[in-house]
Image 1 (cartoon, rainbow, N blue to C red):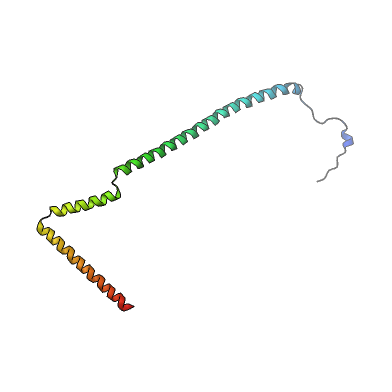
Image 2: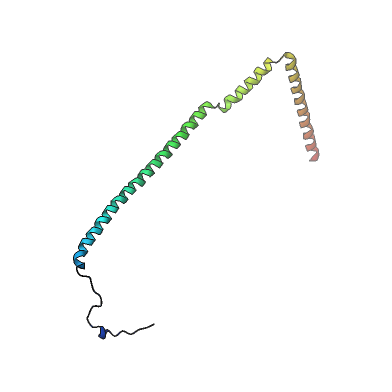
Amino acid sequence: MEQNYDFSRIGKQMPYTVPDGFFEKLEDSVMEKWKEDAVSAGESDKAGSTKKAKVIRMALRAAIAIAACIALFLVVKKVLPQGQDTALDDFDSVELAFNNLSTEDQDYLLEVYQEELILDNELNNLNDLSNEESI
């Protein structure tokens, strides 16, 4: 779609026109537009400061949550018994319960314990013998 224009027919006449008083009003319209932009920029600064305030509040909340977790950990650590102390307390409670039994019950428990040790020892001996034979 190629067209050849004859510029000699157009001449030096401008094909475009400008409304009357356009250039006189141009300065005023530019100044009004600039003022509107300045006002809207000020509003965006307020919005920016609002965003900063939200970020600061979120960071503060996160710091408070972390501090609360650390405090809870320390409190729980002090309240719960330590590992070694509980083992000793368990042994002491078993010994106390054993001492509260009658002598007949104590003798029975010791006899059962001895039988269990003997059976366990014999079972270990049998396992050792079977391992030696398999070699």
